[in-house]
Length: 330
Image (cartoon, rainbow, N blue to C red; front, side):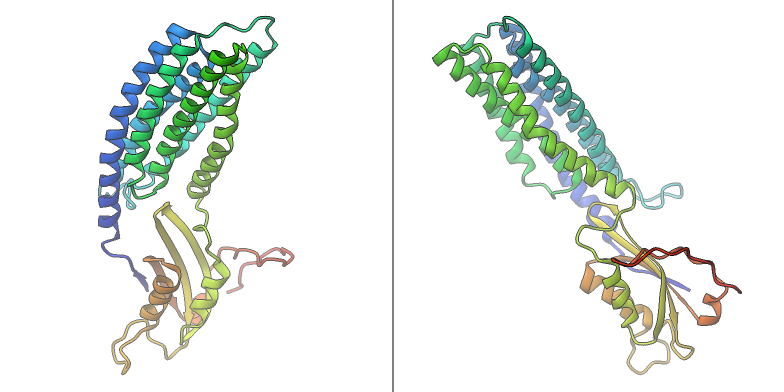
């Protein structure tokens, strides 16, 4: 006997993905224009910081294309082949973008070290650097303003992280240009490129960690599985909870499943009950109201039935010593 809560959630998710898709498309067009400007600037000046910024702009365009495609895919309804739909494509897109940005920042860091060790660093025209840095900054700030009105999904956050990297890069380019113009110090451009790397790497690693957690079926942030178990055990008629799983289908759609062993006289549905509330209703409401889990699948069974099941090993309780779990003997 099972029960599924969360009707209509897919529609809301698709609507959010559609709005994100529109914002991402606008940011993509702006970033593509900034990319053209940066390419011209890097070619004219030979600046590493501008080249670092250009590298980020290239990955930005790729990231925004990926994000737009992911947002479009997330709107597709579930199918017989993919019963959850393609909502997780947004998470996958964010992971690909984080990996790409990490690769670019490592490359820029290596190039910067090589220039620092060189006898004579390349000369960079300060005025041209200042102009191209300013053009990039304006474009990036407009893109960030557009993306800030999105849903805050991992997909949008991943794309916005790229654009933020560009904005910070443009600021670093302009600072380097100012130093070159005022002092003529030849290493200002290289130092600016290293500053860009230092700012971006921690944020990129954090995003990569978050997407990996979702793809590995991790629990939603801030969720305590033992609290959920206790809440289900507190439902009148529930004797035992096993095979409890809590995960996120995408970063915006938490889900849970569990087997509930109930009293012999407890009924899974409300037929024949004076209070009109069943075990399923109460358990589903507890998950929804207390933990924000709209999508739950609960199986109701008797103790006799549970004795004949093979159970998944429960997650270890904090501070407990892990011991081998032996299946129940039927």
